[in-house]
Amino acid sequence: MAHYIAGVLDRESMISAVESLCESASFVPGDRVQTLRGSTAGRVVKILEDGRVVWVPRGTGTELICLPESLRKVSAV
Image (cartoon, rainbow, N blue to C red; front, side):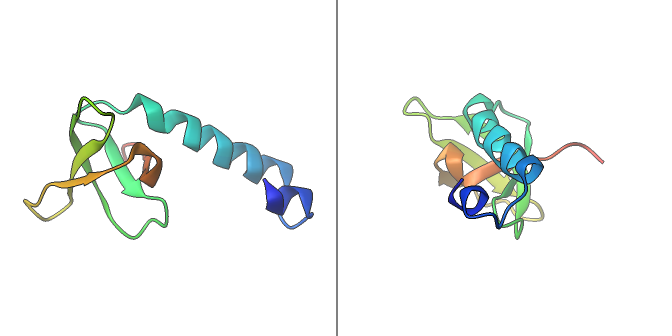
């Protein structure tokens, strides 16, 4: 939001960013996700009782655990 206030980010981009953060609380197993920087993509395996997300990056069998704020949903291609 600071970038929007400073005039560096347009309104639509700011709204999109806020909406993607709001979606982070609604992950379910099977959701396709990627890191916020877009460097790694995969699928949600489960949601832990404390709200953390267990996910598996594409092409690996390794389970990673992170906060939901660290991921964003991606639509099926």
